[in-house]
Length: 163
Image: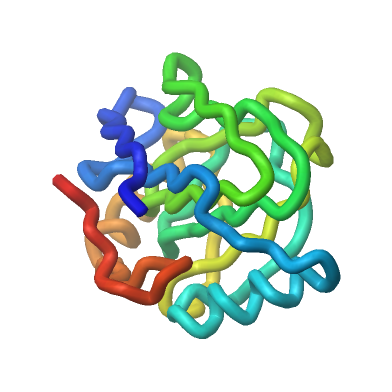
């Protein structure tokens, strides 16, 4: 699977990342029953744990303490990455998005337009940042100290950032 790669510059409000956002289209093979459990086990097996199930927030936010994976198990929506002037991706059932720490993301639809299994590289705990100037120094420090994940969340093979 060769993902689409999106490189997003710091826009002054959101740090974004020199690493690309990776969008794997049609990456998941979902069983008819218990697809959420199947995907949680798949991600966890490849080192992407601290999993959750839900929608995607409808406001710009980012994480500074973890790289995030979003595995879409139902629905479709438009996801804006990179902040207010960022790129818009259409994501749908069976897509997977790897979001490097620092990259702003926002669901442009309704939070429940998609059913997502999310997770974080190396089972890390995540924080929530909203682009406030006061959070930026600490967020930049967290991002700089964060190791790169080495495993693709879907295949378990080496993750190729392509940067």
